[in-house]
Amino acid sequence: MGTLSRAERDLAKGEGDQIEFKPFISSRDPKEGEIVDTAIAFANTAGGRIFVGVADRDASPQGIRGLLQAFRGEGADTALKKQVECLRWLISNKVAPAPRFSIEEIHVFGEPMVAITIESDDAQHYVLGTNDVWVRRGASNVRPRPGG
Image (tube, rainbow, N blue to C red; front, side, top):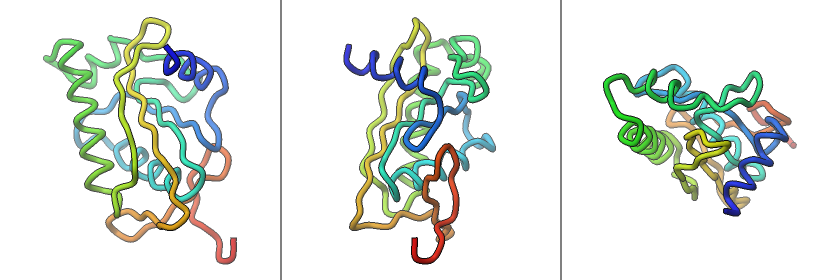
């Protein structure tokens, strides 16, 4: 219950320093890179939560229709599990080193989505496999500036 009320609050608050919304994605979707960049930025700053299955323009859940569009030919339960597996693989394999994170299947306002919680670690810098570094400034991922 605590997770759902926090998710509802996060959706109402909108994107910011520690909240990001992304649509459901299938494997090799161009949005994969955005999710990885955000995971890196959160890990390098104050941590945060990425909600997958949410339209970033208005914070509305995409619902089962959006989930099934991303995973054609799958039932809703299988599609949600595949989404979790895809996200877990992305963060574990594209962020170096892999940050501390958790992924949950949740339902907010009766709609399925996935919540990824990324923890920060001041003693470690996280990068993309290509050594690209990101930090979070407001609702954007940016390259860090020298000295700050």
